[in-house]
Length: 130
Image (tube, rainbow, N blue to C red; front, side):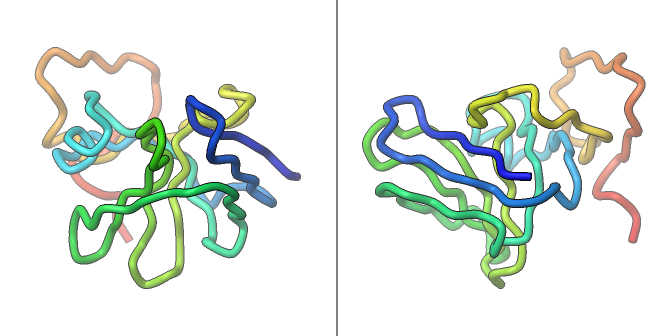
């Protein structure tokens, strides 16, 4: 299955192929700061499943992860592993913003105090156990 999406101004468009490896909501502090919101809801894909057209920029938010955004409007779109394996695509930038539903919350140890979670999804204090 192919899904498409893009940034706010339309300068960056993307396409994903296949189903995501997982769909999670991350509450870690890095995601909060990078997204400017209480969490990052994303679908994780193999990097080879993502094709991007348009000019993006990236910022290394850690040794393992860089954040990718539109150079023109600043829409935060992807979180990409620096080892070139996987990429998280923000759920809200898909054309069909309801294409994927999260299955779990991660990094609840860093969740903002006023965020209430009553959606019945699995919850993990940190990352999902290996």
